[in-house]
Image 1 (spheres, helix red, strand yellow):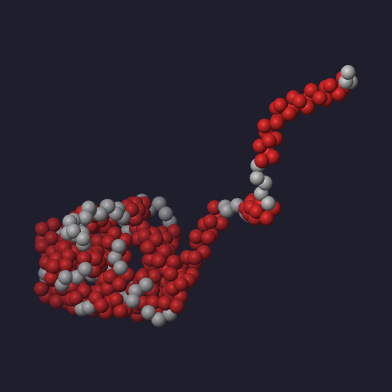
Image 2 (cartoon, rainbow, N blue to C red):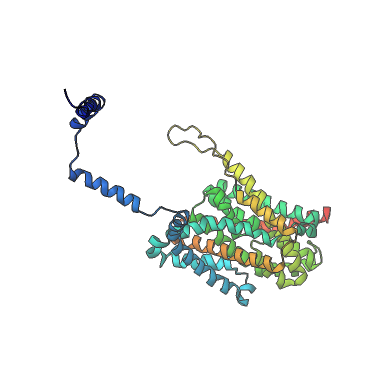
Amino acid sequence: MLPVSQVDYTQTMRFMNWIAGPTLQRIRTFPVPSVENTMPALDSACAASAAPRTVPAAGFAARVRPLLPGLLLSALIAVVSIALGDLSWMQAHGLSALTIAIVLGIALGNTVFPRLAGNCGAGVAFTKQNLLRLGIILYGFRLTFQDIGQVGLAGVAIDALVLSSTFALAILLGTRVFKLERNTALLIGAGSSICGAAAVMATEPVLKGRAEQVTVAVSTVVVFGTLAIFLYPLLYRLNLEWHLLGSTPAEFGVYIGSTVHEVAQVVAAGRAIGQDAANSAVIAKMVRVMMLAPFLLLLSAWVARERTPAAANGRAEPAARLAIPWFAFAFVAVVGFNSLALLPQRVVGGAVAVDTMLLAMAMAALGLTTHLSAIRRAGIKPLILAALLFVWLIAGGAAINHIVMALLG
């Protein structure tokens, strides 16, 4: 007879073998990886566990870092442009910081920038698209709804009729007569009918126009807007004899504000006549600028309804999705907030200064991405279209002012 301890041991081993036997058999037949095959995976796992986890701040820095060279280059051009725009000679000739920025941008874009595009391209594109929208939004700090009351119903009607008739004429002549690309005609029409370069830049996101199309439109604003600075004081002297547009400088100022392209050009032309003319001209111009938001919404709806012929089978493609310019709503909201006069004038002035900087950066970025060869390929037709629109603004705008003032003035 076996001792009790040995019996217990023997029974225990039989029981364990019955329980774990199948498992041990599977373990014996399981392929064991070699050390050479196991170590790389082990090293990778250790490296992954040892690597620092990506935090949101690091991700944000990684996204911003490639933009910095282009942002800094655009900002440098903008600072120089603002400084030049503050010179009395520039102001007397209606050359704003925006105009100077695009000229400097084009000069650098066709000489130095191609060698910097690899490092600066992303930031320049960001400036031209995203910072532009922010600049249009902050533009609302220059306006209040009270401006509408100062020009009255007649002033609002004059601005609306000048805007709509000029833009319609741009579409008709540009696409039907001169056979220009639609976006080129629309951008020239926007610059002539609303507020010059700022309107062109605000319209570009809706149309998705090319850089050279935007530059051609801005160039026409510069050429004919500058010509208006010298022409309108002569027209005022003629009006003193003909009395077509009223006999006071303030009444003629409404005519200036409703027909001259840029705000800076309006100021220069009005001051050449007198302070009363300058004041009424700026107010009329601000009301015209305020129409930018509804104009963009209507333009976006019209563009979305357009159908482009399909190249393959001639069938019409589905209408494009409505591209709502949300920055236009933000622009109106800022105008409404500014109308409440809740902020100190110093703060509003700071916002306007930031806005000027952002718009100047956007214009500089636009110039940097514009090639003179593309402008030359556009030919003389865009300039002729802008010249005809300029003639309409002078003659047709005078007729609209005269008729509306006679009816509502």
